[in-house]
Image 1 (spheres, rainbow, N blue to C red):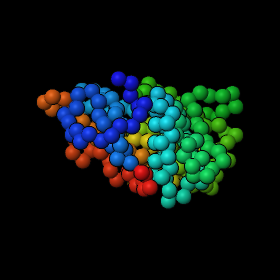
Image 2: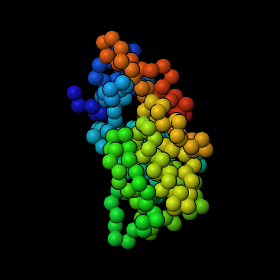
Image 3: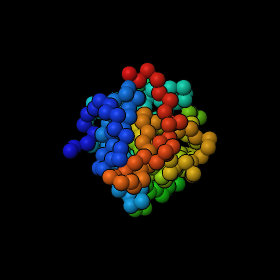
Image 4: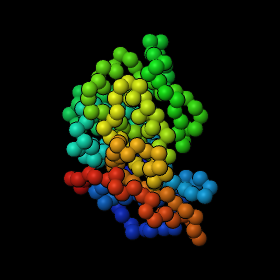
Length: 227
C-alpha cells in the first residue's frame, strides 16, 4: 500500500492495529499512516514530501486554521519537511514571503547563526543554518515556527535555538502532526503548540498495537471551520 495519497472515510476501527493506523482528521475523515515499530512502542509515520499534493494542501489549510489567533507576522519553515507546509500556511495567513532555514552552509553564512540539530528519524548530528541576509525579516515580529511532525521535540527545539540566535523567540510552534506526547517533558512552557492532527503512542497487545490512553495530544488541536 502506498500511504498518504488520499483521505478515507472513518471506519470505527479501534485496534489492535498491525502495520497501519487510520488517523482522524479535522473534517472527520481518516488518513491512513504506517506504524513504525520502535521496539517497546510504535508511532504513526508521516512523510510530507511523499504525500499527494491534494493531501498536503488540505493539511496546510488545517494548519493555517489552527494558527488563527496566534498573531503570526512571519512564518519560519523547518527543513526539510516543514517546508512543505510553511509556504502554504504563510500564503493562507496573507503573508508575502516566509523564512527558510537549511542544512547546508552557503559561502556568506555566519557560524553564529547556526545550531546543532538532530531528530528521531535523522539522529546523525548536523547543523541548522539561517541566511544572515534575511534575518531582518524576523526583527521585532511575532514568529510562527512551522514543522511537519513533533515526536521527541529535538528538531523543533533546534529551530527555537536558531531563532534565539537571530534574536527572536517564536510565538508558537505549528505542526501537521503531533506524534504522541514524548516531546512534552522538554518543550518550553511559553511556546504554545498547535497541530492539524494528533496521533497516539502505541503499545504492544495481542494481535498488534493499541493506542496508549491519553498519549495523543488533543490539546494541540484548536482548528475550526474544518469541514
